[in-house]
View 1 (cartoon, one colour):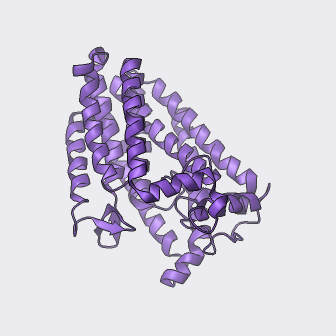
View 2: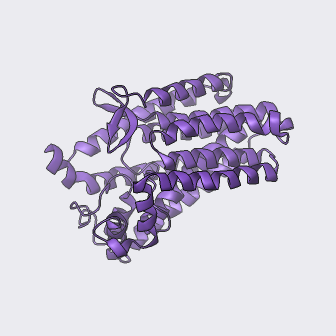
Length: 362
């Protein structure tokens, strides 16, 4: 198992290093224009990285099984924070969304904690109740209701992308635990009209769907972000225009250092760079799944699989959005995109997987 841990760690560190380089490249012009410091975003990212590594070190020092008794408390804390962030003058509002707490120079996004807390809670529940998971009332319904509460709070922010991610990961964990297919199918069929309603209810979501279907029809309006992303990827060719030489980061492509950083990678490093990043994520999913499948502890198995699915799904969605395969979701590329809360909790999640592997050796 040690070889698997080393391999997974090296893959994640490589993704982190790519992120450091590309965040500076994608954000330096914006940072100079906005803050008068081309290193502004890079310095903050490195600070978040250090905080995440320190937190990961402490997670690695304890047996992950000691977290299980506190699963419900962690979930309760995350639910309370999700509720508090919706209150004016407590949660910070930006571009019509209220998703962050502002603590000095830091911005904390409680939905990142909620995603991990929901996985820990579900893993604990499945460890204790796996033998009755096929029953609807006592086995399937309780985690479903908890998931529903978390999803309602994230939708209110509003953050539909995170909501769908939480639901998808939780339901997949239930499937792995042996939940009945028709129970899952019932929830899926019920969710489709609900998601459609949530999209139709908000004009900006409808605009995103229209832009996804044909971004070039209004390339200077609702399709601007997707068309600029595709221009960036297309102009990179096979080997790219060269590191630091992107034209799209010169205020053409919004969110160049966050949600659309893969497009800048494609422009500067070409198809070779883009495929290398995608292959690193494929390798990460394979390595993480292999480590988790070797554990003989149910809580560790479901916890690890939930984490791998969460990070893997987020990577797939981000790549899909960048190339125009999915509507814009606002999910960052794990370990590479700029973002404080996401990076910290993603590193903690990796520490939990390594902890599962390490504990298995004893």
